Image (cartoon, rainbow, N blue to C red):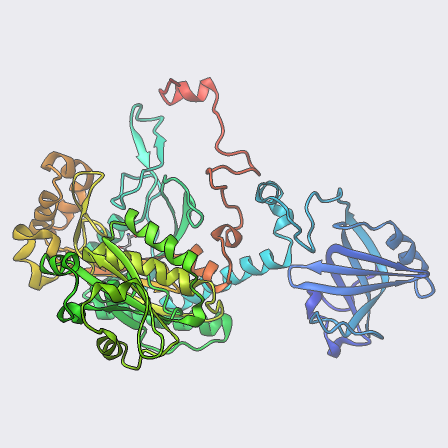
Length: 586
Ligand code: ASP
């Protein structure tokens, strides 16, 4: 083998400055085309592809080897860079080709069970079974490389801001994120189990008590939940905690982090500060705490209509505190009668007392809503709409208890506008001031909206006992295009307040002592005020890469039933292993 003239290049390093020079490349045969005395091969490596030319006249020996090459063979190729006669404008190296003087087959390949070039309708099961081939596809390779770049950008931004990267244990105790734990039996302590962390929550708080002041970690977390499309049993969190801060410090830090990611990885600018909405505002305007702000429609309070002599049922409802909200939509949104009937039917199962609508026609609106009022409501509606009710407007309205009405309209809003959103637009918003608690029908008790270490708003402290569900918290979520990217809070740093919260949550002393006693104890040894946030890295990458599934941005994900078709995990274990662990199968 002749010595290379230039050191190894990636395929897409081949550019016009190298014309006439010799290069040595390593990679996979992507496509082979034969034309008489010439064989063309697209050689692929992690950077992309470049065309190799095996010309019988130019180098007979290489030409002969080329005839044997098949898709996905691994080769070394050495030759001269030349300009192509027929450039291909669709690839970065499309103006160039390499005339091969030496070729070595480094390994053969069986015919791949899934295509590397075009992904025809191949089942995800098969893609995951042969993930190492699936990852050779350009789109997947690009997702994984961009994931690396995003992580890199986060690391350098947080380092620049003085954050220390500190590890926390994987074999630990239950953490309070509300999902089921993955458990690991302890061989040395038979009958006892470690829990894999649902998040590093308690340890990052302990690190604040230790005095590290600014912590971060990009770390795997584990939650044993029923899987949904955007969930994985193990996922990666960007976990952050800092001392001596308030909510505003977190907003500023995180705003800057996303600005850096977009600039570093996508060359996009992000205007700061990012929008902030309180939880109550988000619910009233968009019917959800995860609004997709690319959808222009907003919900409006139609309370003004109370003065227009509503029918008895509505009047009575208003008196009982029920609410009337609506969304104005242009007729161009093409809402058919059939859709309106479907919404009317679904409103019943969503605890909405009445779903109604009107269509404005010049001079007089039509539709069932008009009949709910004794007098003309057109003028009021144009006041609410801040413009005339021309023939292009449809008003969708729902009446009943406030929260179900808003949630229902929020869903209509997403259905109407969701399909036409621009995937390339990024609309971030902070949702702040969540309620501290909510009522859980399932558990029949009050539960934390975030987790029990979240601090109440100081001005709401006196409501804690009297009216706990009215207490707002120092908590925040960051939402991007209708998806929650992450959330966090300022924490409770005084043990007596923390104990009070556990009591309100109905946890008895023995229970919390056993679960979180070590944090409670630590809070008594000089805990600084602190707070933090955590983001789902997989989701961040999924949205920025305009993918629909987080599985497409994770190298080796699990299926929706939590299995790995590639490795066969989870698997049974031998009787010997079971007995070493002191376990018996039922
Ligand atoms: N530990 C929380 C979570 O994993 C986030 C936080 O409060 O920092 O959702």
